[in-house]
Image (cartoon, rainbow, N blue to C red; front, side):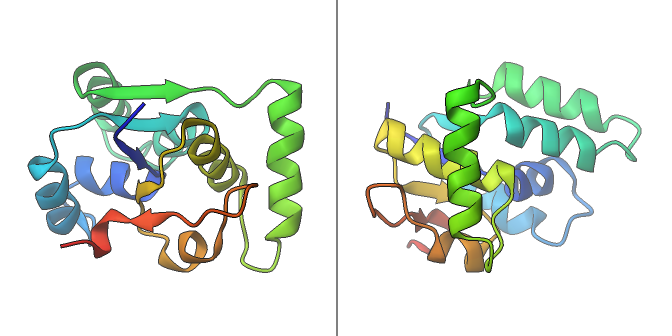
Length: 140
């Protein structure tokens, strides 16, 4: 599958005009015509972060339903173990479960471009095979 991986921060920023990075993320996403790929952990984090906004959950659900968004699940035991191994490897960065699922997704799909606001983490993280991810916010 080709496209961009999308992390929690840009998803929330895109949906909420009050977010500091809203304009930058919106401009980048509005110019992109490919598929967006994420994990159920990212959707869960986004739902949690937008819960204070009256229509926050609805906006996440509508985005997931109308955007070219593909959502993968990494909650089965083998994937959980792989995610925890990554979290332990990057404990000093740190890496949370959502980040780990994004790195596993990059490895499994061979997609290296990620839309993320977590520069420190995703410039450090490597796929299990050692490949770096590339921030699409830094491209152009």
